[in-house]
Image (cartoon, rainbow, N blue to C red):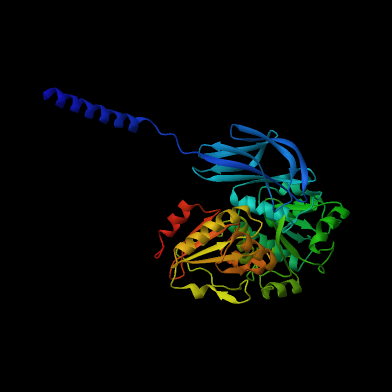
Length: 454
């Protein structure tokens, strides 16, 4: 009897020891995945390139489909972490953030049979942006050849990596140009990481020395550019700006994203609040002072900064804020207001038909809505027309309300910078949380757990 008891105690002790041993052995973190995608502007062939993500390398190339379609050219299993990316030995200005149990895409953009300069997009949001750009939904800033105030070459590649504001001006203007420069001072104070460039429309007068002296006299620290007359004319032509001297000319301001694509443009007289720095104020003549006091044409630094925040994905609504109201047309021809869903939790999803992650998550969203009749699923398409949206809905068997956000104004109001992006709205219409990228079952459940009725 005692022997049996001793054996039992020994077995118990062994079991405890095994458990303790298992607890003490460090667990390997769950891995994630990286996939390398290829897409092109017109359906092309890429000469093989070597892609290195962290310490892992693979060769990709061959036939590349036209965006928004893409080809999965390689897949890697990686431990969670942030990975540097090299292509053919050149470090790219992106990092791929891998998370356990998730797939992170890396897109190589191809044009004219080779990698687009700056055309490496990491993460779901940026990959979707790249596919939109390659598919022609956004216009690329063409290459140009100018020089800055120090005589250094300035071309399209020099603008990659940062969102950029470009303004037309010349140093002898006494009306709108000082207002545009004053506007850049306001933008610089509020968004110091944004690159600012002023390009002259009067290259005969504004040579390198003149620009350097002007920049110093007004206390600016951003780039001022000029060039040969033909180069300046070519630069401004797509914006509808003609070379000019004096005060009769077209004024314009353009926003270029960090990948070199034109995202928005403004023309006319900006509202700078009726005040300018002293050095700029002294440049104004009577007509210029009238423009300054007239507060412009309805746009100024707040509107430009809102656009910049959207580009940088920094315009995210703070949780607890009320969701921006909207009324949008649906595929059946009716009009639907967000207000109609008040009193119910809402999953508000922004998507478009050429977005591969959107296609991936759509069945999950529809299944969740079907299983939770107390929750409203609302799908907003800011990119496609009616035909493309209908084809997507038919292919994914979606029957939730699909709304068309022509021009993307609603997406901009919500600060959507990439697709898909999902907002989770409480019953009172306030934002509980948001999720950029394709949802998994686990992440969807986690967000919905904070909403009543989820």
